[in-house]
Length: 137
Image 1 (cartoon, rainbow, N blue to C red):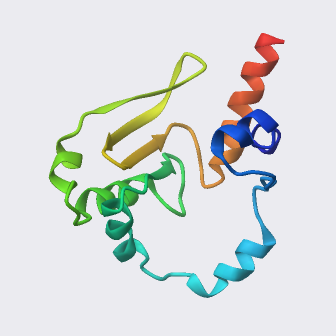
Image 2: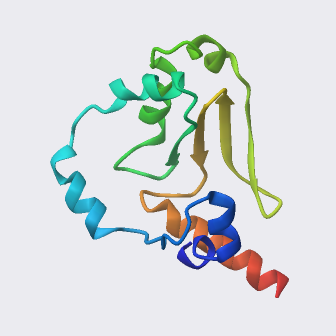
Image 3: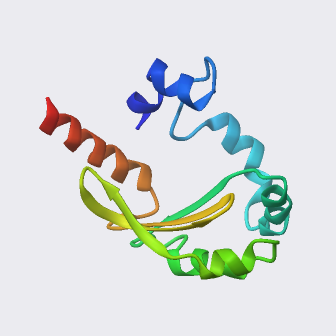
């Protein structure tokens, strides 16, 4: 994942400038250490109302942040698009031509359930990208 996200063309597309991606930043971890078990969901509707795009994702094999609990709070969250988000269809999430999960979105909010992925799903996507690169190369 790091190799992919640190490519200049990817960083340019994401608009992150010279920042380097790291999968687990000690600086960020230390800064957020006091936030364990705080309900930050109460702040998310304001972000959505401001048009800030949000992707909530969870692996279907994640025992720490299970996908069903995440899906339920996302669907129950009170915001102006709640009803339309609830009515939005769930579509296939496809990676390298194979179904890799399911995606539901409306406006700035999206929920992604990733198949066969646990808590460290970035390792899952890295493996999928590596397999694609290996097949192409």
